Length: 96
Length: 249
Image 1 (tube, rainbow over the protein chains, first blue to last red):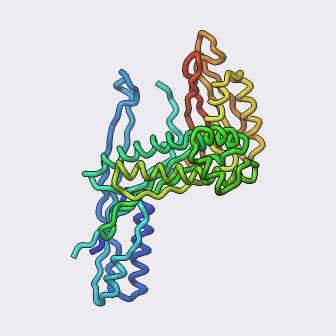
Image 2: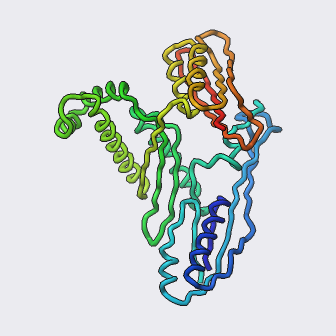
Image 3: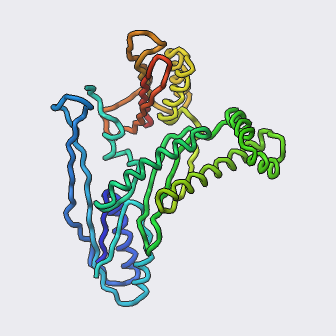
């Protein structure tokens, strides 16, 4: 199971699509992209350096998670998986 | 408390990108932010004499196959101009005798304009290597620095702000500076500019703020590409704040 985690939605979508199409072209069984629910962390912060409690500003950070299920038949696919280059801003991990 | 948001922060959804782009888990997130801050501070210090920097972008690649983590720094800066480099190189060579020996051995003794390019690139590479060594001592990671040069100062808001602050510190009249910048920006293909200057302008007792606008600046439309920058000029009478909005299309 190939996990992808990122803070950026565009990157994670494009990377998972690319990996999926690459693995399909090598003819191994890929059960498609599954998106787990995103975790949103919100922060509420006072805008001014001194008083003015009533005016604040909200920030949030979103964690996107997606995974692919792969059945590995031959060792060549395994080597492919280990050599995948990720762009910065996304982390991938493999669970068996 | 003012009423206008930061136009870049407002447009992170559509047009703008974050300046540092990486992923990390909860445990190391705060340490990486501290490192980012240190990197930005040190790059500004190291390249103070040579380049006026507008953007510093940081990308991190995580540990793959047991290697160290890689940090890729991309610097957007103004291309150093010939007149300034001539003066600075003369001063630099007088101070450090080793460099002058290296230069005289490899490039020829006399400094003509053709050799300036090679000398500036040589000094820049030396500075980047110093920076990388310095950062590698503090944080044990591999670094990769790339510098993108911008040709025109009047197409980037941070560079315009630094230009204005230089002029104000030399005690030029602020109205003249604002008119000059707007004239020069009209020569490029930029559709709108707004400049605001506030503080003790011309050294008067009562502070006030003045702004001037030319062209269109639609701050309410989200898909508009607006470049905003804020900078300070430290004068004898106090601090003057400079804000610039550029509408690029």
